[in-house]
Amino acid sequence: MDKIAALTEILKTDSTNAFARYGLAMEYLSQGDTNAGLAEFTTLIEKNHDYVPAYQMSAQTLAKLGRTGEAISRLKEGLAVATRTGNTHAASEMQALLDDLTS
Image 1 (tube, rainbow, N blue to C red):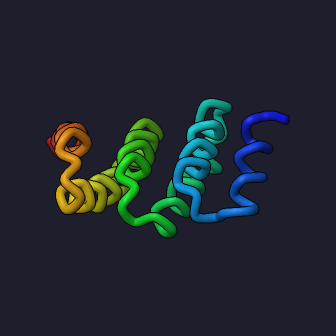
Image 2: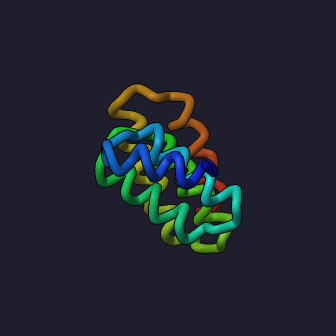
């Protein structure tokens, strides 16, 4: 069974499994399916508001695609969550990307 099938199977049982959803998004990205990857990140954020890596990776992906406005919005959301949850490392990295995109 390939990774996408395995992770999808896990999510059929538990659609809120953040680790599986994140893995699925990353696997889609690694296979070049950015739309599916971004959709999974969005679903992950909707189901697990505090999962900071989803904000960070989706913002990086949006930035790489030239979707700067969407990346900035996602970064601002992610920074608020990272600050609230005490994830200073991710907040620092997201702030650096935000600074790059807005300068």
